[in-house]
Length: 265
Ligand code: SF4
Ligand code: FES
Image (cartoon, rainbow, N blue to C red; front, side):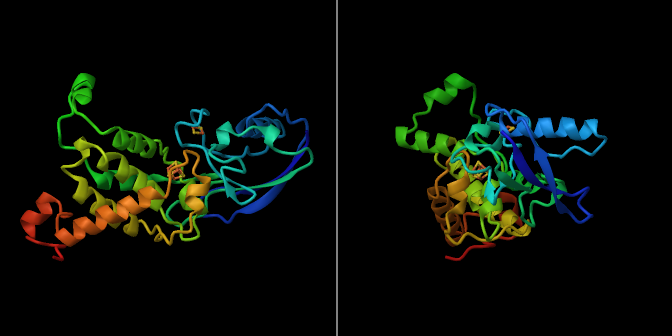
Protein backbone atom coordinates (compact mmCIF):
# COMPACT_ATOMS: atom_id res chain seq x y z
CA UNK A 1 0.00 0.00 0.00
CA UNK A 2 0.97 3.65 -0.51
CA UNK A 3 0.56 6.40 2.07
CA UNK A 4 0.93 10.15 2.07
CA UNK A 5 2.25 11.42 5.39
CA UNK A 6 2.22 14.99 6.62
CA UNK A 7 4.68 15.06 9.51
CA UNK A 8 5.44 17.84 11.99
CA UNK A 9 9.11 18.72 11.56
CA UNK A 10 10.73 20.89 14.18
CA UNK A 11 14.51 20.99 14.59
CA UNK A 12 14.52 21.85 18.27
CA UNK A 13 12.45 23.38 21.06
CA UNK A 14 13.31 26.96 20.08
CA UNK A 15 12.65 26.84 16.34
CA UNK A 16 9.24 26.94 14.71
CA UNK A 17 7.93 23.74 13.25
CA UNK A 18 5.93 22.99 10.08
CA UNK A 19 4.15 20.10 8.41
CA UNK A 20 6.20 18.37 5.69
CA UNK A 21 4.66 16.02 3.11
CA UNK A 22 6.21 12.59 2.40
CA UNK A 23 5.13 9.83 0.02
CA UNK A 24 5.70 6.31 1.37
CA UNK A 25 5.21 3.65 -1.33
CA UNK A 26 5.34 -0.10 -0.68
CA UNK A 27 4.10 -0.10 2.89
CA UNK A 28 3.69 -3.67 4.13
CA UNK A 29 0.31 -4.21 5.81
CA UNK A 30 1.96 -6.23 8.58
CA UNK A 31 4.40 -3.51 9.57
CA UNK A 32 3.78 -1.66 12.79
CA UNK A 33 3.34 2.09 12.49
CA UNK A 34 6.86 2.64 13.87
CA UNK A 35 8.34 0.14 11.40
CA UNK A 36 6.69 2.09 8.61
CA UNK A 37 8.41 5.23 9.96
CA UNK A 38 11.70 3.28 10.14
CA UNK A 39 11.36 2.60 6.42
CA UNK A 40 10.68 6.27 5.73
CA UNK A 41 13.70 7.23 7.86
CA UNK A 42 16.01 4.81 6.04
CA UNK A 43 14.92 6.45 2.82
CA UNK A 44 15.49 9.96 4.25
CA UNK A 45 18.95 8.99 5.53
CA UNK A 46 19.86 7.50 2.13
CA UNK A 47 18.90 10.82 0.54
CA UNK A 48 21.02 12.73 3.09
CA UNK A 49 17.94 14.18 4.85
CA UNK A 50 17.33 14.40 8.58
CA UNK A 51 15.28 11.37 9.76
CA UNK A 52 12.01 11.98 11.60
CA UNK A 53 12.57 11.88 15.38
CA UNK A 54 10.04 9.83 17.35
CA UNK A 55 10.23 8.22 20.79
CA UNK A 56 10.16 4.45 21.23
CA UNK A 57 11.76 1.70 23.27
CA UNK A 58 10.01 -1.62 23.95
CA UNK A 59 7.74 -1.59 20.87
CA UNK A 60 5.55 -3.99 22.86
CA UNK A 61 3.09 -1.54 24.40
CA UNK A 62 4.62 -1.62 27.85
CA UNK A 63 7.21 1.16 28.26
CA UNK A 64 5.12 4.23 27.41
CA UNK A 65 7.80 5.88 25.28
CA UNK A 66 5.97 5.97 21.97
CA UNK A 67 3.06 8.23 21.13
CA UNK A 68 2.01 11.03 18.85
CA UNK A 69 -1.15 12.18 17.14
CA UNK A 70 -2.40 10.46 13.99
CA UNK A 71 -5.09 12.53 12.30
CA UNK A 72 -5.81 14.29 15.59
CA UNK A 73 -6.12 11.14 17.72
CA UNK A 74 -3.50 10.28 20.33
CA UNK A 75 -1.96 6.87 19.45
CA UNK A 76 -4.15 6.69 16.33
CA UNK A 77 -7.52 5.18 15.54
CA UNK A 78 -7.34 1.78 17.28
CA UNK A 79 -8.74 1.80 20.80
CA UNK A 80 -6.59 0.53 23.65
CA UNK A 81 -3.46 0.39 21.49
CA UNK A 82 -0.12 2.18 21.58
CA UNK A 83 1.37 3.39 18.32
CA UNK A 84 4.08 0.71 18.48
CA UNK A 85 1.35 -1.94 18.51
CA UNK A 86 -0.71 -0.30 15.76
CA UNK A 87 -0.32 -2.08 12.43
CA UNK A 88 -0.63 -0.73 8.94
CA UNK A 89 -3.48 -3.12 8.08
CA UNK A 90 -5.72 -0.73 10.00
CA UNK A 91 -5.15 1.94 7.34
CA UNK A 92 -6.27 2.14 3.71
CA UNK A 93 -4.19 2.20 0.56
CA UNK A 94 -3.76 5.81 -0.55
CA UNK A 95 -4.69 7.25 2.84
CA UNK A 96 -3.35 10.61 3.91
CA UNK A 97 -2.16 10.82 7.54
CA UNK A 98 -1.19 13.82 9.65
CA UNK A 99 1.36 13.09 12.39
CA UNK A 100 1.90 15.64 15.13
CA UNK A 101 3.53 15.58 18.58
CA UNK A 102 1.55 15.85 21.81
CA UNK A 103 0.48 19.48 22.20
CA UNK A 104 0.55 20.60 25.84
CA UNK A 105 2.42 23.35 27.59
CA UNK A 106 3.67 20.93 30.24
CA UNK A 107 4.99 18.50 27.59
CA UNK A 108 7.02 20.74 25.25
CA UNK A 109 8.32 19.53 21.89
CA UNK A 110 11.97 18.46 21.87
CA UNK A 111 12.19 17.59 18.19
CA UNK A 112 9.68 16.53 15.50
CA UNK A 113 7.34 14.03 17.23
CA UNK A 114 9.30 13.85 20.49
CA UNK A 115 8.11 15.72 23.58
CA UNK A 116 9.70 16.20 26.98
CA UNK A 117 7.70 14.26 29.57
CA UNK A 118 9.90 15.00 32.56
CA UNK A 119 6.92 16.79 34.14
CA UNK A 120 5.48 13.29 34.68
CA UNK A 121 8.66 12.27 36.53
CA UNK A 122 8.31 15.29 38.80
CA UNK A 123 4.68 14.35 39.53
CA UNK A 124 5.80 10.87 40.56
CA UNK A 125 8.66 12.29 42.64
CA UNK A 126 6.22 14.63 44.40
CA UNK A 127 4.23 11.54 45.44
CA UNK A 128 7.21 10.42 47.53
CA UNK A 129 8.14 7.03 48.89
CA UNK A 130 6.21 4.23 50.56
CA UNK A 131 7.60 4.18 54.09
CA UNK A 132 6.40 0.71 55.05
CA UNK A 133 8.81 -2.15 54.69
CA UNK A 134 7.14 -4.34 52.08
CA UNK A 135 9.65 -7.17 52.48
CA UNK A 136 10.09 -9.83 49.82
CA UNK A 137 7.40 -11.44 47.67
CA UNK A 138 6.23 -13.93 50.36
CA UNK A 139 5.82 -11.02 52.83
CA UNK A 140 3.80 -9.10 50.26
CA UNK A 141 1.60 -12.11 49.65
CA UNK A 142 1.01 -12.50 53.40
CA UNK A 143 -0.90 -9.21 53.51
CA UNK A 144 -4.48 -9.91 52.58
CA UNK A 145 -5.97 -7.53 50.01
CA UNK A 146 -9.63 -7.76 49.00
CA UNK A 147 -9.87 -9.15 45.46
CA UNK A 148 -11.79 -6.16 44.17
CA UNK A 149 -9.15 -3.76 45.49
CA UNK A 150 -6.25 -5.75 44.11
CA UNK A 151 -7.93 -5.91 40.69
CA UNK A 152 -8.58 -2.17 40.66
CA UNK A 153 -5.05 -1.40 41.86
CA UNK A 154 -3.63 -3.59 39.09
CA UNK A 155 -5.83 -1.88 36.50
CA UNK A 156 -4.54 1.52 37.65
CA UNK A 157 -0.94 0.27 37.73
CA UNK A 158 -1.25 -0.52 34.02
CA UNK A 159 -0.66 3.18 33.24
CA UNK A 160 2.54 3.42 31.19
CA UNK A 161 2.95 7.21 31.46
CA UNK A 162 2.67 7.80 27.73
CA UNK A 163 0.97 11.20 27.98
CA UNK A 164 -1.85 10.51 25.51
CA UNK A 165 -4.44 11.53 28.10
CA UNK A 166 -2.85 14.97 28.44
CA UNK A 167 -2.46 15.39 24.69
CA UNK A 168 -6.10 14.58 23.98
CA UNK A 169 -7.59 16.64 26.80
CA UNK A 170 -8.72 20.13 25.67
CA UNK A 171 -7.49 21.36 29.09
CA UNK A 172 -4.18 19.46 28.86
CA UNK A 173 -5.06 17.93 32.21
CA UNK A 174 -2.91 15.14 33.65
CA UNK A 175 -5.77 13.93 35.86
CA UNK A 176 -6.05 10.43 34.36
CA UNK A 177 -2.32 9.84 34.81
CA UNK A 178 -2.36 11.31 38.33
CA UNK A 179 -5.51 9.42 39.25
CA UNK A 180 -3.97 6.13 38.07
CA UNK A 181 -0.80 6.68 40.10
CA UNK A 182 -2.71 7.75 43.22
CA UNK A 183 -5.25 4.91 42.91
CA UNK A 184 -2.78 2.09 42.43
CA UNK A 185 -1.16 2.84 45.80
CA UNK A 186 -4.25 4.18 47.54
CA UNK A 187 -6.14 0.93 47.04
CA UNK A 188 -3.49 -1.20 48.75
CA UNK A 189 -2.72 -1.51 52.48
CA UNK A 190 0.95 -0.66 51.82
CA UNK A 191 -0.12 2.67 50.32
CA UNK A 192 -2.16 3.87 53.32
CA UNK A 193 0.45 5.60 55.56
CA UNK A 194 1.22 8.36 53.00
CA UNK A 195 -2.11 8.28 51.17
CA UNK A 196 -3.26 11.77 52.16
CA UNK A 197 0.08 13.54 51.71
CA UNK A 198 0.60 11.82 48.40
CA UNK A 199 -2.67 13.04 46.91
CA UNK A 200 -2.16 16.64 48.04
CA UNK A 201 1.50 16.80 46.95
CA UNK A 202 0.86 15.30 43.50
CA UNK A 203 -2.11 17.57 42.76
CA UNK A 204 -0.07 20.61 43.86
CA UNK A 205 2.81 19.57 41.60
CA UNK A 206 0.43 19.18 38.64
CA UNK A 207 -0.68 22.77 39.13
CA UNK A 208 2.94 23.93 39.26
CA UNK A 209 3.68 22.10 36.02
CA UNK A 210 0.81 23.99 34.35
CA UNK A 211 -1.34 20.96 33.59
CA UNK A 212 -4.97 22.00 33.25
CA UNK A 213 -7.93 20.97 35.37
CA UNK A 214 -10.28 18.09 34.63
CA UNK A 215 -13.74 19.05 33.39
CA UNK A 216 -14.96 15.46 32.87
CA UNK A 217 -14.81 15.49 29.08
CA UNK A 218 -13.54 11.92 28.89
CA UNK A 219 -11.22 12.20 25.88
CA UNK A 220 -8.40 10.87 28.09
CA UNK A 221 -10.22 7.62 28.81
CA UNK A 222 -11.12 7.21 25.13
CA UNK A 223 -7.48 7.32 23.97
CA UNK A 224 -5.70 5.70 26.91
CA UNK A 225 -3.88 2.67 25.46
CA UNK A 226 -4.25 0.91 28.82
CA UNK A 227 -7.96 1.76 29.05
CA UNK A 228 -7.64 3.42 32.45
CA UNK A 229 -11.14 4.48 33.51
CA UNK A 230 -12.33 7.90 34.65
CA UNK A 231 -13.14 6.42 38.06
CA UNK A 232 -9.48 6.95 39.05
CA UNK A 233 -10.06 10.71 38.74
CA UNK A 234 -13.07 10.54 41.04
CA UNK A 235 -10.95 8.55 43.51
CA UNK A 236 -8.15 11.14 43.31
CA UNK A 237 -10.58 14.00 43.92
CA UNK A 238 -12.04 12.16 46.88
CA UNK A 239 -8.59 11.52 48.38
CA UNK A 240 -7.56 15.13 47.78
CA UNK A 241 -10.69 16.59 49.39
CA UNK A 242 -10.51 14.26 52.35
CA UNK A 243 -6.83 15.08 52.89
CA UNK A 244 -7.30 18.85 52.69
CA UNK A 245 -10.51 18.97 54.75
CA UNK A 246 -9.00 16.94 57.55
CA UNK A 247 -5.60 18.66 57.33
CA UNK A 248 -3.97 15.24 56.97
CA UNK A 249 -2.48 16.09 53.58
CA UNK A 250 0.44 17.99 55.10
CA UNK A 251 3.71 16.12 55.14
CA UNK A 252 5.13 15.45 58.63
CA UNK A 253 8.14 17.74 58.15
CA UNK A 254 5.90 20.60 56.94
CA UNK A 255 3.48 19.99 59.80
CA UNK A 256 6.37 20.22 62.27
CA UNK A 257 7.35 23.63 60.87
CA UNK A 258 3.82 24.93 60.48
CA UNK A 259 1.26 23.16 62.65
CA UNK A 260 -2.15 22.78 61.01
CA UNK A 261 -1.01 24.29 57.68
CA UNK A 262 -3.60 23.46 55.06
CA UNK A 263 -6.14 22.32 57.65
CA UNK A 264 -9.68 23.37 56.90
CA UNK A 265 -11.68 21.60 59.50
S1 SF4 B 1 -3.47 7.24 31.97
FE1 SF4 B 1 -3.36 6.14 29.98
S2 SF4 B 1 -3.06 7.75 28.45
FE2 SF4 B 1 -2.52 8.62 30.46
S3 SF4 B 1 -0.33 8.33 30.70
FE3 SF4 B 1 -1.34 6.55 31.67
S4 SF4 B 1 -1.43 5.02 30.02
FE4 SF4 B 1 -1.00 6.97 28.99
S1 FES C 1 7.58 1.72 22.42
FE1 FES C 1 7.13 1.00 24.45
S2 FES C 1 4.99 1.33 24.60
FE2 FES C 1 5.42 1.83 22.54
